[in-house]
Image 1 (tube, rainbow, N blue to C red):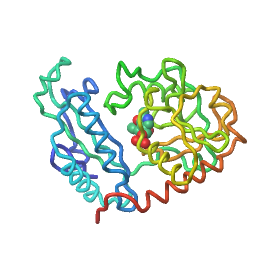
Image 2: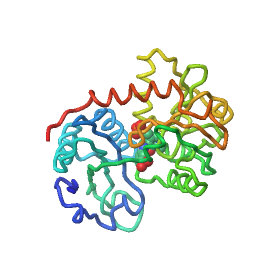
Image 3: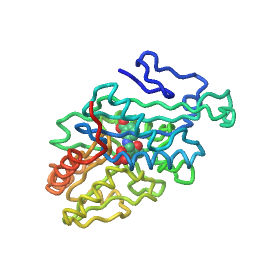
Length: 291
Ligand code: PXG
C-alpha cells in the first residue's frame, strides 16, 4: 500500500510521523472520510468543503487549494489501484514541542491521505438490521468542542463506542446534554413515523453528515416528507423504522433500541427504498478517475 505523506507517495511501512506532531500529542488537526465507488469519488466537493471548514474553525491553514487536494486524492487512489475505496484525509498542526501552543508548530502541517478498503459492519446487519443501545457518554457540547468540527480528537465518540461494545452492541446512541437524541458514534440517525422521515437538526450535537444530506435529497426526490426535528428517546422507541447513515457505514437499518423493537423488528419499507436509491446514486455520481 502507498500512503500520501506531505506531498510524497511512500510505502505504508515508511509512512511515519513525528511523536512531537500535535495531531498525535493533542488531537490537534482535522480529517475526512470519503468513499469512491466504481472509480467515482462520491460527494468529493462536499467532503472537501467540510474539511476546509473544520480547518478554518480550528485556525489551521490548509496548505493546498481544493483542486490540488482533489489531485492528491486521485493520485493516492490510483497508486493503490482501487476501483472502490475508503479515503481518509488527515491534516494535523504538525511537529511542535511539548506544550499546547500551536504557534510552536510553525505551520509545518502534516498532510496524510490513505486509500484503502473498508467494511464497517458485517453484511448480515445490512439485511437484518442492527440493535443499538443508549450510552452514558454525552455528545460533546457545541460550546466546548463543536461536533461540526471533524477534529482528530474523537475521544468523545471512542468512549461511546467502548460503552456500546462493552454491552454487546455494534453501535451506541449518543444523547446531547439535554437528553435529546444526537447521533451514533460515527453515524447520523433517522427514524420513520407514519411514512415521514425525522432526523435531529445539527444544533443537537449532531454532525451535519454528508450521507445524511444525501438521504434528505433522496427523500425529496421520492416525495417522502422529511423533517429536521428534535427527537427524544421515547419518540425513537415508538417509531416505525430507523436507520443510520455515514460514509463508512453507508445506510444501516436499526431494528432495536435499548431492548425496544422498532416497528415489527425488521428493516422497514421506507428504509429499504432509501437504501436502494442511495446505492443507485453512488454508482453514477462523483468525480471520475481512471486507473
Ligand atoms: N457523525 C459522526 C460523529 C461522524 O464522525 C458521521 C456522523 C457521518 O457523516 P458522513 O458525512 O460520513 O455521512 C460521521 C462520519 C468510523 C468513522 O470508523 C466514521 C466517521 C468518521 C470517522 C470514523 O466509524 N463518520
